[in-house]
Image (cartoon, rainbow, N blue to C red; front, side, top):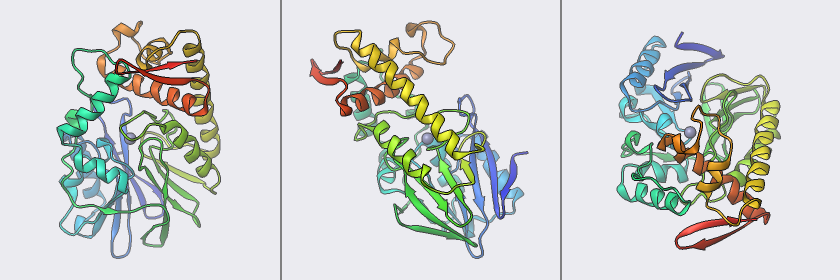
Length: 321
Ligand SMILES: [Zn+2]
Protein backbone atom coordinates (compact mmCIF):
# COMPACT_ATOMS: atom_id res chain seq x y z
CA UNK A 1 0.00 0.00 0.00
CA UNK A 2 1.50 3.27 -1.05
CA UNK A 3 -1.06 5.35 0.85
CA UNK A 4 -1.85 4.70 4.51
CA UNK A 5 -4.01 6.55 6.96
CA UNK A 6 -1.89 7.61 9.92
CA UNK A 7 -4.21 9.69 12.10
CA UNK A 8 -7.53 11.47 11.70
CA UNK A 9 -7.35 13.39 8.39
CA UNK A 10 -3.63 12.58 8.01
CA UNK A 11 -2.31 10.18 5.37
CA UNK A 12 1.15 9.03 4.42
CA UNK A 13 2.12 8.63 0.77
CA UNK A 14 5.15 6.38 0.43
CA UNK A 15 7.44 7.75 -2.27
CA UNK A 16 10.24 5.32 -3.24
CA UNK A 17 13.78 6.74 -3.41
CA UNK A 18 15.55 4.49 -5.92
CA UNK A 19 19.13 3.44 -5.05
CA UNK A 20 19.03 5.48 -1.85
CA UNK A 21 19.62 3.99 1.62
CA UNK A 22 16.69 6.01 2.96
CA UNK A 23 14.51 3.72 0.78
CA UNK A 24 11.43 5.93 0.72
CA UNK A 25 10.10 9.32 1.69
CA UNK A 26 6.97 9.68 3.77
CA UNK A 27 5.01 12.55 2.22
CA UNK A 28 2.18 13.44 4.62
CA UNK A 29 -1.12 14.77 3.40
CA UNK A 30 -3.45 16.53 5.82
CA UNK A 31 -7.00 17.22 4.74
CA UNK A 32 -8.33 20.58 5.88
CA UNK A 33 -11.59 22.45 5.45
CA UNK A 34 -10.67 24.99 2.79
CA UNK A 35 -7.00 24.22 2.23
CA UNK A 36 -5.10 20.94 2.56
CA UNK A 37 -1.43 20.54 3.34
CA UNK A 38 1.17 18.34 1.69
CA UNK A 39 4.41 17.91 3.63
CA UNK A 40 7.51 17.14 1.49
CA UNK A 41 7.53 15.63 -2.00
CA UNK A 42 10.35 13.36 -3.29
CA UNK A 43 13.24 13.52 -5.76
CA UNK A 44 12.67 15.01 -9.16
CA UNK A 45 12.72 11.51 -10.68
CA UNK A 46 10.01 9.68 -12.67
CA UNK A 47 9.59 6.90 -10.05
CA UNK A 48 9.01 9.48 -7.30
CA UNK A 49 6.68 11.59 -9.42
CA UNK A 50 4.50 8.61 -10.36
CA UNK A 51 4.21 7.46 -6.74
CA UNK A 52 3.37 10.90 -5.40
CA UNK A 53 0.86 11.71 -8.14
CA UNK A 54 -0.89 8.36 -7.87
CA UNK A 55 -1.05 8.74 -4.08
CA UNK A 56 -2.62 12.18 -4.42
CA UNK A 57 -5.03 10.79 -6.99
CA UNK A 58 -5.99 7.90 -4.74
CA UNK A 59 -6.83 10.43 -2.04
CA UNK A 60 -8.80 12.53 -4.52
CA UNK A 61 -6.64 15.58 -3.82
CA UNK A 62 -6.86 18.74 -5.85
CA UNK A 63 -3.63 20.73 -5.72
CA UNK A 64 -5.74 23.83 -6.38
CA UNK A 65 -6.73 23.66 -2.71
CA UNK A 66 -3.46 22.25 -1.35
CA UNK A 67 -0.40 24.04 0.01
CA UNK A 68 3.07 22.53 0.47
CA UNK A 69 5.26 22.62 3.58
CA UNK A 70 8.93 21.73 3.19
CA UNK A 71 10.65 20.43 6.32
CA UNK A 72 14.05 21.17 4.76
CA UNK A 73 15.94 21.84 1.57
CA UNK A 74 17.21 18.38 0.58
CA UNK A 75 16.19 17.28 -2.89
CA UNK A 76 14.38 14.14 -1.70
CA UNK A 77 11.97 16.55 0.03
CA UNK A 78 11.83 19.44 -2.44
CA UNK A 79 12.46 17.84 -5.84
CA UNK A 80 8.83 17.52 -6.93
CA UNK A 81 7.44 20.85 -5.75
CA UNK A 82 7.28 22.25 -9.25
CA UNK A 83 5.81 19.06 -10.67
CA UNK A 84 2.87 18.95 -8.22
CA UNK A 85 2.10 22.50 -7.12
CA UNK A 86 -0.75 24.46 -8.65
CA UNK A 87 -0.88 28.20 -9.35
CA UNK A 88 -2.68 28.65 -6.06
CA UNK A 89 -0.41 26.48 -3.88
CA UNK A 90 1.61 28.32 -1.26
CA UNK A 91 5.01 26.68 -0.69
CA UNK A 92 6.41 27.16 2.81
CA UNK A 93 10.03 26.76 3.87
CA UNK A 94 12.42 28.20 6.45
CA UNK A 95 14.43 31.26 5.52
CA UNK A 96 17.80 29.50 5.76
CA UNK A 97 16.76 26.48 3.72
CA UNK A 98 14.81 28.55 1.19
CA UNK A 99 18.06 30.44 0.52
CA UNK A 100 19.77 27.16 -0.32
CA UNK A 101 16.86 25.90 -2.43
CA UNK A 102 17.07 29.09 -4.51
CA UNK A 103 20.77 28.72 -5.26
CA UNK A 104 20.96 24.91 -5.42
CA UNK A 105 21.07 25.01 -9.20
CA UNK A 106 24.03 27.40 -9.28
CA UNK A 107 27.67 26.52 -9.83
CA UNK A 108 28.72 28.94 -7.08
CA UNK A 109 26.80 27.03 -4.43
CA UNK A 110 28.34 23.67 -5.35
CA UNK A 111 31.75 25.23 -5.90
CA UNK A 112 31.78 26.58 -2.35
CA UNK A 113 30.73 23.23 -0.95
CA UNK A 114 33.40 21.45 -2.94
CA UNK A 115 36.03 23.93 -1.70
CA UNK A 116 35.03 23.13 1.87
CA UNK A 117 35.50 19.39 1.24
CA UNK A 118 38.97 20.06 -0.17
CA UNK A 119 39.79 21.88 3.10
CA UNK A 120 38.58 18.79 4.93
CA UNK A 121 41.15 16.76 3.02
CA UNK A 122 38.97 15.11 0.39
CA UNK A 123 41.27 13.94 -2.39
CA UNK A 124 39.61 12.55 -5.46
CA UNK A 125 39.99 13.32 -9.13
CA UNK A 126 36.43 14.53 -9.25
CA UNK A 127 35.14 16.83 -6.55
CA UNK A 128 31.54 16.72 -7.67
CA UNK A 129 29.07 16.38 -4.85
CA UNK A 130 26.83 13.31 -5.32
CA UNK A 131 23.69 15.39 -4.71
CA UNK A 132 24.49 17.85 -7.47
CA UNK A 133 22.74 15.92 -10.21
CA UNK A 134 19.49 15.78 -8.21
CA UNK A 135 19.43 19.47 -7.40
CA UNK A 136 15.97 20.90 -7.82
CA UNK A 137 15.56 23.99 -9.85
CA UNK A 138 14.34 26.12 -6.96
CA UNK A 139 12.78 28.90 -8.96
CA UNK A 140 9.37 28.55 -7.38
CA UNK A 141 8.14 31.25 -5.00
CA UNK A 142 8.31 30.35 -1.31
CA UNK A 143 6.73 31.88 1.76
CA UNK A 144 8.95 31.92 4.81
CA UNK A 145 7.99 30.25 8.07
CA UNK A 146 10.00 30.02 11.26
CA UNK A 147 10.01 29.46 14.98
CA UNK A 148 6.81 30.71 16.59
CA UNK A 149 4.69 30.64 13.43
CA UNK A 150 1.56 28.53 13.20
CA UNK A 151 0.18 26.36 10.43
CA UNK A 152 -3.51 25.55 10.77
CA UNK A 153 -5.09 22.73 8.76
CA UNK A 154 -8.60 21.57 9.57
CA UNK A 155 -8.80 21.16 13.33
CA UNK A 156 -5.04 20.87 13.69
CA UNK A 157 -3.02 23.82 14.93
CA UNK A 158 0.64 23.17 14.27
CA UNK A 159 3.42 25.18 15.85
CA UNK A 160 6.48 25.61 13.66
CA UNK A 161 9.69 24.54 15.43
CA UNK A 162 13.14 25.40 14.16
CA UNK A 163 15.29 22.29 14.72
CA UNK A 164 18.71 22.87 13.10
CA UNK A 165 21.20 20.02 12.80
CA UNK A 166 20.29 17.93 9.78
CA UNK A 167 20.11 21.24 7.91
CA UNK A 168 20.58 24.77 9.18
CA UNK A 169 16.94 25.70 8.66
CA UNK A 170 15.20 22.39 9.37
CA UNK A 171 11.58 22.78 10.55
CA UNK A 172 9.27 20.43 12.45
CA UNK A 173 5.53 20.82 13.02
CA UNK A 174 4.13 20.23 16.49
CA UNK A 175 0.47 19.78 17.40
CA UNK A 176 0.37 20.27 21.14
CA UNK A 177 -3.19 19.12 21.86
CA UNK A 178 -2.99 15.99 19.72
CA UNK A 179 0.66 15.37 20.73
CA UNK A 180 1.80 15.00 17.13
CA UNK A 181 5.32 15.78 15.94
CA UNK A 182 6.00 15.92 12.21
CA UNK A 183 9.72 15.46 12.54
CA UNK A 184 11.12 15.63 9.00
CA UNK A 185 14.66 14.22 9.12
CA UNK A 186 15.41 15.50 12.63
CA UNK A 187 14.12 12.23 14.06
CA UNK A 188 14.24 9.00 12.07
CA UNK A 189 13.48 5.60 13.55
CA UNK A 190 15.56 2.91 11.89
CA UNK A 191 18.33 4.99 10.37
CA UNK A 192 20.41 7.77 11.91
CA UNK A 193 19.80 11.20 10.36
CA UNK A 194 22.85 12.43 8.51
CA UNK A 195 24.51 15.25 10.42
CA UNK A 196 27.10 16.85 8.18
CA UNK A 197 29.15 20.01 8.07
CA UNK A 198 28.12 22.48 5.36
CA UNK A 199 28.91 25.95 4.11
CA UNK A 200 27.75 28.31 6.87
CA UNK A 201 26.84 25.26 8.97
CA UNK A 202 30.03 24.62 10.89
CA UNK A 203 28.74 23.08 14.12
CA UNK A 204 25.72 21.06 13.01
CA UNK A 205 26.12 18.41 15.72
CA UNK A 206 26.11 21.06 18.45
CA UNK A 207 22.88 22.42 16.93
CA UNK A 208 21.46 18.91 16.64
CA UNK A 209 22.00 18.11 20.33
CA UNK A 210 20.18 21.33 21.20
CA UNK A 211 17.31 20.37 18.88
CA UNK A 212 17.05 16.91 20.47
CA UNK A 213 16.91 18.48 23.92
CA UNK A 214 14.16 20.78 22.74
CA UNK A 215 12.08 17.95 21.22
CA UNK A 216 12.56 15.85 24.34
CA UNK A 217 10.81 18.55 26.37
CA UNK A 218 7.60 18.29 24.31
CA UNK A 219 4.68 15.96 24.93
CA UNK A 220 4.59 13.71 21.88
CA UNK A 221 2.71 10.48 21.27
CA UNK A 222 2.92 10.34 17.48
CA UNK A 223 6.22 11.00 15.72
CA UNK A 224 5.72 11.26 11.97
CA UNK A 225 9.16 10.80 10.44
CA UNK A 226 10.07 11.65 6.85
CA UNK A 227 11.61 8.27 6.03
CA UNK A 228 10.88 4.62 6.70
CA UNK A 229 9.11 3.58 9.91
CA UNK A 230 7.86 5.75 12.74
CA UNK A 231 9.35 5.25 16.23
CA UNK A 232 7.13 3.90 18.99
CA UNK A 233 8.64 6.32 21.49
CA UNK A 234 10.17 9.68 20.63
CA UNK A 235 12.01 9.77 23.96
CA UNK A 236 13.63 6.37 23.55
CA UNK A 237 14.69 7.26 20.03
CA UNK A 238 16.22 10.55 21.19
CA UNK A 239 18.26 8.64 23.79
CA UNK A 240 19.50 6.24 21.11
CA UNK A 241 20.44 9.08 18.75
CA UNK A 242 22.28 10.89 21.52
CA UNK A 243 24.13 7.68 22.48
CA UNK A 244 25.05 7.05 18.87
CA UNK A 245 26.66 10.47 18.51
CA UNK A 246 28.22 10.20 21.95
CA UNK A 247 30.04 7.03 20.83
CA UNK A 248 31.05 8.64 17.56
CA UNK A 249 32.47 11.63 19.45
CA UNK A 250 34.54 9.32 21.65
CA UNK A 251 35.73 7.39 18.63
CA UNK A 252 36.71 10.59 16.78
CA UNK A 253 38.45 11.98 19.86
CA UNK A 254 40.47 8.77 20.27
CA UNK A 255 41.51 8.86 16.62
CA UNK A 256 42.61 12.50 16.71
CA UNK A 257 44.53 11.97 19.95
CA UNK A 258 46.33 8.95 18.50
CA UNK A 259 47.82 11.06 15.68
CA UNK A 260 49.81 14.25 15.32
CA UNK A 261 47.19 16.29 13.58
CA UNK A 262 44.92 15.18 10.77
CA UNK A 263 42.25 16.32 8.36
CA UNK A 264 38.61 15.24 8.68
CA UNK A 265 39.17 12.93 5.71
CA UNK A 266 42.01 11.15 7.51
CA UNK A 267 39.91 10.84 10.65
CA UNK A 268 36.99 9.54 8.56
CA UNK A 269 39.22 6.91 6.98
CA UNK A 270 39.95 5.53 10.47
CA UNK A 271 36.38 5.61 11.76
CA UNK A 272 34.06 2.65 11.51
CA UNK A 273 31.33 2.82 8.85
CA UNK A 274 28.41 0.50 8.24
CA UNK A 275 29.18 -0.15 4.64
CA UNK A 276 30.32 -3.25 2.83
CA UNK A 277 33.65 -1.95 1.46
CA UNK A 278 36.56 -3.41 3.40
CA UNK A 279 38.92 -0.47 3.19
CA UNK A 280 38.57 3.29 2.93
CA UNK A 281 40.16 3.18 -0.53
CA UNK A 282 37.32 0.93 -1.71
CA UNK A 283 34.62 3.34 -0.55
CA UNK A 284 32.69 4.76 -3.51
CA UNK A 285 33.47 8.52 -3.77
CA UNK A 286 29.86 9.43 -2.92
CA UNK A 287 30.10 7.50 0.36
CA UNK A 288 33.40 9.23 1.12
CA UNK A 289 31.66 12.57 0.72
CA UNK A 290 29.07 11.71 3.33
CA UNK A 291 31.58 10.06 5.66
CA UNK A 292 33.88 13.11 5.60
CA UNK A 293 30.95 15.46 6.19
CA UNK A 294 29.86 13.41 9.19
CA UNK A 295 33.35 13.00 10.61
CA UNK A 296 33.85 16.77 10.31
CA UNK A 297 30.57 17.41 12.18
CA UNK A 298 31.95 15.40 15.11
CA UNK A 299 35.40 17.03 14.97
CA UNK A 300 33.88 20.50 14.83
CA UNK A 301 31.85 19.84 17.98
CA UNK A 302 34.94 18.46 19.75
CA UNK A 303 36.80 21.62 18.73
CA UNK A 304 33.93 23.86 19.87
CA UNK A 305 34.00 22.10 23.25
CA UNK A 306 37.77 22.62 23.47
CA UNK A 307 38.51 18.86 23.52
CA UNK A 308 40.66 19.23 20.41
CA UNK A 309 42.08 22.16 18.43
CA UNK A 310 41.79 23.09 14.78
CA UNK A 311 44.41 24.96 12.80
CA UNK A 312 44.77 25.78 9.13
CA UNK A 313 47.81 24.54 7.25
CA UNK A 314 48.39 24.82 3.49
CA UNK A 315 44.66 25.23 2.92
CA UNK A 316 43.69 22.23 5.03
CA UNK A 317 41.93 22.15 8.36
CA UNK A 318 44.07 20.11 10.74
CA UNK A 319 42.59 18.75 13.96
CA UNK A 320 44.82 17.79 16.84
CA UNK A 321 44.21 16.50 20.35
ZN1 LIG B 1 17.29 15.36 4.53
